[in-house]
Length: 283
Image 1 (cartoon, rainbow, N blue to C red):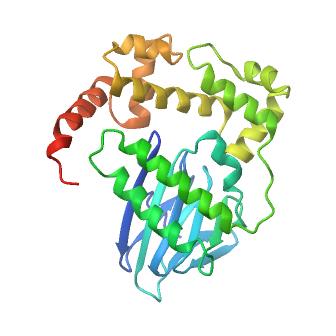
Image 2: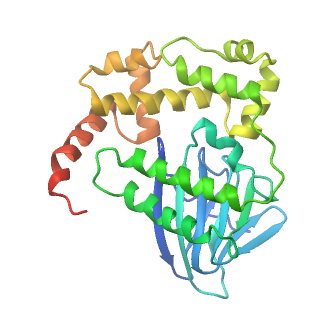
């Protein structure tokens, strides 16, 4: 069997979105998935998602949620020849995690049928707004888009009839500690002590409920905060790095570039250019 070409994954800090009207040749293959969550909403046509035991076909009014690290094997359902859908890759805020317990079709692959839900119109409207805000000219477009995505997930939660497992309170303690102590040295043992769990048990809960390893989750929070500081302050990169817990500015720059595709200075320059252009940009 010929080896399939890997689809490139976009680097993101909070979210990136798209609105596709795809023809019969559209397909995506990522054998190891991505480090973020992916959500799609089908508007028209049919989509297909493959998994280890087979495939699922998604219709208009259905949403699919894919956990980090899960195979991406999706595209247009061959007999229908087209798939019109909205998509977003995102890193959830800590309080969102328990909203993401959807009916599972295969490990890491979840589907929610909103076709007959009273919330369908609201879900579709806000999902369109997620993409419009994420690609707009507002200075805080990612934050606006994240707020709209939060509404999408809340309405989806209202349409979800599945049995839900609440976010483990001990995991929440560890996640909150990460977010509130970004400038401090934090290790897996630190988080284990805060949560009252063993390092192995905490790692398991992070992976199964938050979709990430503890230290990777911590780094994402640090880099997301660094992104905000680069946008709204004139602090030198070295100080921004220290504010978010990086002792070595060079290592900070390497990790920041890996996540965003830009160096911290290039990211700040682009953000400032966007602010200057925004009054003249079309809405």
